[in-house]
Figure: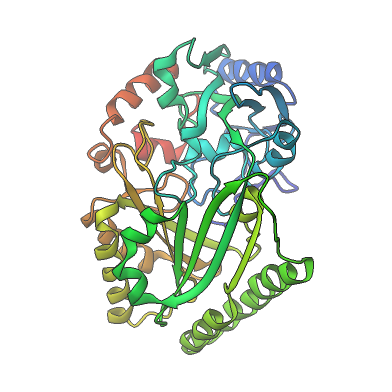
Length: 437
């Protein structure tokens, strides 16, 4: 978000910048004018969404375009279940926009505060071994290129570019419209419960494959996994949602209030962390309910943290997770935030972390007031050893030299960037590092 005085900072407070200029374009034409003007002055320009990336991918030292006013539903093709949105539309706004048409997004991540453009540009994903990240739902997009011109990509215009633009890292142009392949509205039956960690790990791939959507959290210093299993049901299925009081107790009181207190205590007195984590396992995540898909996929995250996440070949997830557990024990660290494990199907999006392979994700977190460097860098080495690819919107240390070896279409993407932005109008320090200058 952009604060008074013109300083922009992300949600995790890991990045901040004071842009030379901030604009709030309400229309596509206004974006075009801003890009043309920046090019004329030789100033770099970047668009930002909700600021939920932990990396510097949206940092804009030159001109910052806040796209919050470029939001809303443009059109719906009910017959083909497709919907076009302006790029600044927040994911949490989408369900209400699609509901009158009987549609929903196929899959979502576990938060929904991001803009559509930001979510797809950074590779945001949920979980589900048969489902891809949000970028795989993109069937069309309109981009303002570095010349201020409009580039449309879909099945009729420039279809070969859809897999590149769908996850463009903000390097190919400024997204102004996104067309999503939706599905008929559906509900999810959710079962969230603590289970013995060793039992979950012993059947990990089977659990992920058998369920529509499966994930688990592990609080370090405990022997329990907090599992989440969601089963897709028709939109007409009976709903048994959480009661307002029950949801408030779980999400606001325990998930936010008590967790914030726990993190503050743990930071001040690290020796208390194992006991706090064991208490958290007893208090969290033992519930069953059925509700509209978007209400089950996403949860509120009010306690700030910083995150690193790596995508691994699914067959390597167990070994990498075991090494992370051993690492925490060997270093005698006290880690208050859980480790999260999720899954995704292989896809064909050029810069997707799941490109060409069935994927499992391991994410590690630290409370935002704690220094994550030592923990993250040690875990990163484990992930790299197991063929990991870093989430573009979460903290990592890799550069273009290493990333090129991990993405088969890396050079194709860079070549397209050279064609669409030869003067690097859209560059920033993060893109210089991960794509080369």
